[in-house]
Image (cartoon, rainbow, N blue to C red; front, side, top):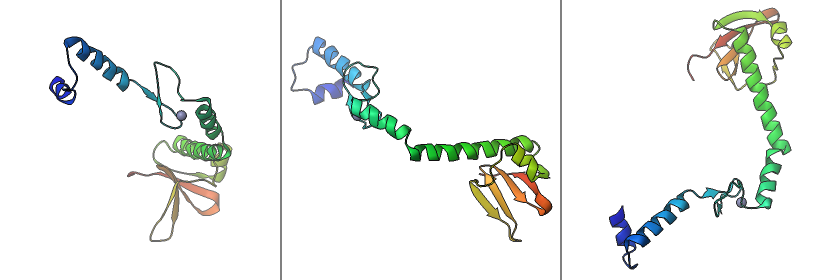
Amino acid sequence: MLNTYFRLYSFVVVCKRTVICHQNRYMSLKQEKSCGECGRTINGRTDKRFCSDNCRNTFNYKLNSDVTNYVRNINNTLRKNRRILRELNPKGKIKLSRERLLEKGFDFAYHTSTYTTQEGSQYFYCYDQGYLPMKRGYYLLVVKKEF
Ligand SMILES: [Zn+2]
């Protein structure tokens, strides 16, 4: 590394002291942080996460924007659905009523994928946890083996 250094900076009159000086600078450059919003380097030793008030405000605005909240709410609903299915189906397969799911707060409007068999049965999945609607308001809960 030092050889490369000498080659790159052969125009500099290098004594032991300046090498150390440049190495320190090189190390402090590597520790520089970048702005959480625009990615620009934040200069100086600092605990700041943003390069400016503007960037901090923009970041926080996006964090709390309607679209962000909308996506967050759907993600939370999907995760909750998955948790409910998993809790009700510890052995990987169980038949239960729609009411059992609803009383836990299951939201039938949201799933991550569907699977239709050749016979035309449609499974609904929340991640790895799924269900198959059956007759008379019953559901067969299943678990996806492969992802
Ligand atoms: Zn910035």
